[in-house]
Amino acid sequence: MGVLNVTPDSFFDGGRYASIDAAIARGRAMFAEGADVVDVGGESSRPGASTVGADEELRRVIPVIEALSPLGVVSVDTVKPAVARAAVTAGAGLINDVSGTLWPAAAECGVGWVAMHRKGTAADMQSDPRYDDVVAEVHAQVLNLADRASEAGVGEIWVDPGIGFGKSVAHNLELLSRVGELVRDAEGHGARVLVGTSNKWFLGVIGSGGAEPLPPDERAEGSLASSTWAMTQGVQMLRVHDVVGGAQAARLVGPLDRASEREGVAR
Ligand code: HH2
Image (spheres, rainbow, N blue to C red):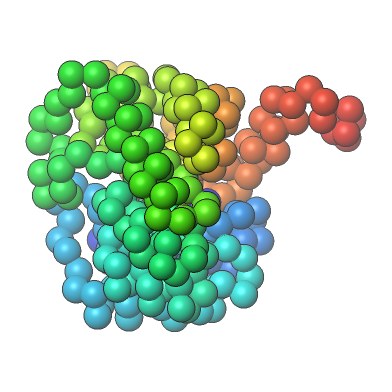
C-alpha cells in the first residue's frame, strides 16, 4: 500500500503532493512501481495535526481518487463517514480508518475496511501513553472490531496495530515483535493484517542508536527493515512511502517464505 497524502502538513510527505496534479502523478507512479493499493489521505493524523473540515478534505481527495481508481485499488484514509462514502462513490474500494469506527460506512458501501488501533486523539495520543499489556490490549481491541465489522456484513477486513498512534518506542517494538501472533489470530476472525511503520518517529529514535533522533528523511533504512520484518512475520500488507523498496522486499520475502515457490524463482 503506497501512501499518498494530499495535505500540506503530513509528517513525511506533507506539501509534496498538495496539488491535485502532483498527487495524481505520484499515485500513477506508485501503481507503476508495484503498489497493489494507493492510500489517498486529505487530513494528517500525526500528533498535534490540526483537523480539516469535510469540504476541504473532499476537495483534496475526490479528484485524485477519481483519476487513480481506474488504475488499481484506491483506499481512502479518513475518519469521516461522509468523506468515506463520497470516496467510494468516486471509486475507492477500501476505507482506511485510523479511528476504528467506520465499519458501518464500509458495510453500507460494500467495500473493505481497515480497523486501526489508536489510543487517544491526534491532539493527545503521544502524551505518555500507558497500557497494562500493550499487545493483549491492542490485539483484543482490533479483533473485536473485526468481529463487529464481520457481523455488519463487511467482506474484506484488515486489522492494524496502529504503530505510533498512542504508543511509546517500547510499545511499538513490542507490537512489532509479536505481530505474527496478530496474523495468526486475525485469520480466525476473518481478517488480515496491515502495518504502517514507514518513516515514523520510533525509527528515528532506534536508528540513531541513542543520539539525537534521526529526522524523517533519514528513516528510509529503518522503514524498509521494519516492513521486511513484518513481512517475515506473515503480515499481508505494508503501508509505505517508498513503494520501490517495499515491492522489492515483498518480491524477495514471498518466495523465501513459501518453500514450494522457490523452484519458480529465476536463477
Ligand atoms: N499511519 C498514518 C496514517 N494512516 N493508516 C493505517 N492503517 N496505518 C498506519 O500506520 C497509518 C495510517 C500516519 O502516516 P502518514 O499518512 O505518512 O502521515 P500523516 O498522518 O501525517 O498524514
